[in-house]
Amino acid sequence: MRYIFAAALTLGATPALAATKNIFSAEFYDLSNTDFVVLLSFLIFCGIIVYFKVPGTLMGMLDKRAETISSELDEAKSLREEAQSLLASFERKSAEVKDQADRIVAAAEEDAKAAATQAKADLEKSIARRLQAAEDQIASAEASAIRSVRDRAVAVAVDAASEVLAKGTDAKRAGDLFDDALATVKAKLH
Image 1 (cartoon, rainbow, N blue to C red):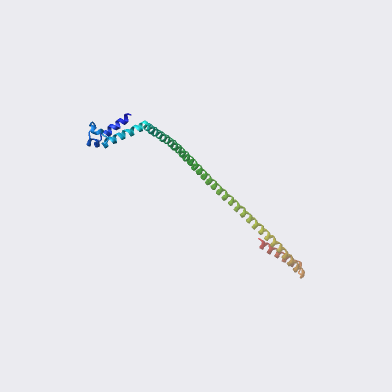
Image 2 (cartoon, rainbow, N blue to C red):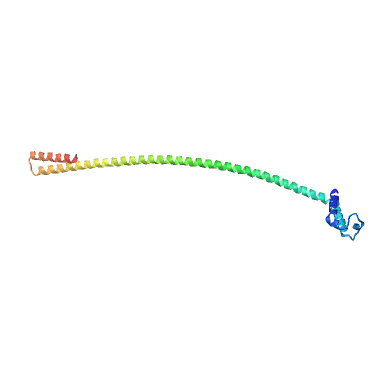
């Protein structure tokens, strides 16, 4: 109620009223005076608003709105804190994943170096085995060739001796020829 009277006094002291008739004169309270009618209408309007408790309702609505805004701000604040904690969690997990990836890469590099070293050693062993096998084959072929040459030389010597003997050479001459053939074979084999 105090608010209505304060508003009425404030409106009553407006420059428009000061320029027209004085509020304390009888002419002011005449219904033909538009200022009085407007003032009276305003006071009735304010009375109706107060009677129906519109200011209390408006204040209640404003209080509810303030509470809603406050609760929304609190919720937004809690959501922000939750988002910050999730962000921090994701950053920690990201750092952990990066560290794990670095460890995996380092382990893979070490494994690759070890595999390369092992492959090099295996290759060297394989080359050594193949060289040894080739040398063994060469030695075997050489021994086989020497045997073949000796066998052929013996066969040639036997054939030569039999020809000499068949022609009727004397025994001394056949022995000399055999010794010469044997010396030739020995010279060619060594």
